[in-house]
Amino acid sequence: MASNKDLAIKTERLTLRPFKKSDLEAMMAYHALPEVQRYLDWKARDRVEVESALQSMVKQNRLTRPGDTIHLAVVEDDSEAVIGQIALRWTDATAGQAEVRFIFNPEFRRQGYASEAVSAVIGLGFESFNFHRIFAICAGKNQASARLLKKLGMRLEAHYREHALFQGEWDEELHFAILDREWKRSEKVKEFPQAKGKTTISSPMVA
Ligand SMILES: CC(C)(COP(=O)(O)OP(=O)(O)OC[C@H]1O[C@@H](n2cnc3c(N)ncnc32)[C@H](O)[C@@H]1OP(=O)(O)O)[C@@H](O)C(=O)NCCC(=O)NCCS
Image (cartoon, rainbow, N blue to C red; front, side, top):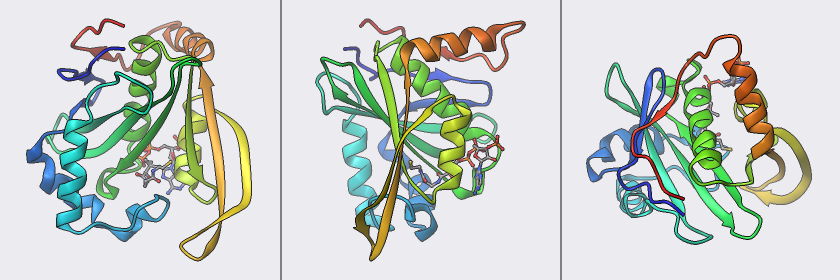
């Protein structure tokens, strides 16, 4: 599997790159907000916790074996601000499975940024890492995330009802996924008649 150490993905309005220690303030701006963690499996983080999360994210920058994750900071080109993050986790080698996860700063939401960035990372997973299937899990009430995943062409494969207790309430979980051939087919549709929102990966990776 390829390394993303020097990876940079360029989309129409964004650059996705590995995290740096200097991203702490930008991460604090959204990790410390209770509304951000509402549908995530961690509580709002204080400075020490964000710093420790960032330290491990900086190190998690390659996929060499199942269980590895790459974390990418999403940078808005106009402001050069880090507006969110996306993780790609290699979950199974034999079956070529991976999970995508994402968080965006509320200040930058509803502008199509998450769609643009998550789409680029799914493309990276299929085209550069040769995954066979990419999945995402979101809370049943997380309408924003469910809408985003459907919009990207992911299929709702399961809805787990009241399968666990989370922060004192019944948890509902939605499982979405897309196969490599489905993604490539939809890319072809998008390319015709005219390619829009071109994505480029600056460091070609060797699988
Ligand atoms: C989910 C999240 C990444 C969406 O970010 P975003 O930048 O607002 O997403 P986009 O602007 O690309 O919008 C994607 C779609 O979701 C819709 N959407 C966004 N926020 C929404 C909301 N609060 N309610 C309903 N739909 C919403 C958008 O309208 C868009 O659909 P459309 O093009 O059909 O209108 C963001 O809300 C977030 O970070 N949430 C907290 C963390 C989280 O839940 N992560 C996911 C864990 S699985």
